[in-house]
Image 1 (cartoon, rainbow, N blue to C red):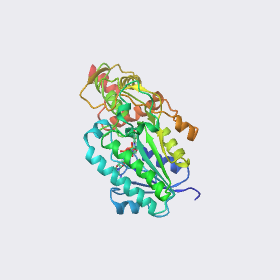
Image 2: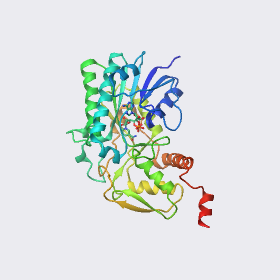
Image 3: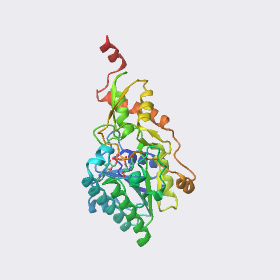
Image 4: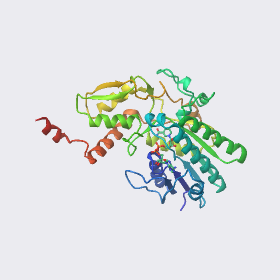
Length: 335
Ligand code: NAD
């Protein structure tokens, strides 16, 4: 076989599962590791192992056997509701995963290690305005990241830099900005805004009210998962060792996101703003200048386009769960 030997951690999760599929399509040998199996379809990895990567021995096992590259995507994470309510658990779980995975990969002579960081590392004081200036990589300092999840990501980024500095261990650092797409969590508390809103829209009848956290004027950019996977592979192959944004710079308010999603099934919905719901920073956007300079590429799938592929998948899941009436059932109920 001509491909590389690649380990993807978090392969039972959203981005990891998509990445494994793509790496297999590209002809690589892939081991997927996660604390759980993928939820919606079987993994296409050559080997899929259930392991708790907070544990050192498990990280040593995961990285065994001549692995060339590690995409370290495993993390305890969720949407804004989850990450604001679980600082201690998230910070402890993730620092254990990242510290052990880095060292285990180094001891096994892995050639490259990619760490999945987050836009949550950016200084909160620079995200107070909905009409935000897009964030450049250097805006993470002076440090004032999101409590818990963001502090851990920023520290793990530093750890990657130390490993390069002290051991010449090749690390790559990617800061994702809100990734969405099919096969992602859409319920249960860990889902993010595009999936949560898609679920609420799918479950609502035309003319209903749906709840929106905050006043809906907070802004974000969202990246479709295919762009994310393409970016990951390109960043891994690049020679750039410092942190890079990976996101789109198509800024929308959460109210606009609701409108774009409602337009897919053609529903007219009334937004009920829950001002006590968690909403995170006021505005966040990705400055892609450095990404463009390093890769000559940036994510390009428009939000409307990506949501047209994501919404039907969530709707179909809800149908399968028996939570959604078919058009015929709705008409019969109205008679
Ligand atoms: P996800 O929750 O779907 O995937 C993470 C996976 O890690 C899960 O399957 C989970 O079971 C696994 N995991 C958690 N604890 C583990 C443990 N102790 N041992 C082994 N596996 C464990 O999330 P995702 O959206 O696919 O995110 C992947 C990476 O990207 C994460 O590091 C996340 O912090 C980062 N990220 C994602 C986004 C986004 O918008 N999705 C944004 C910023 C950063």
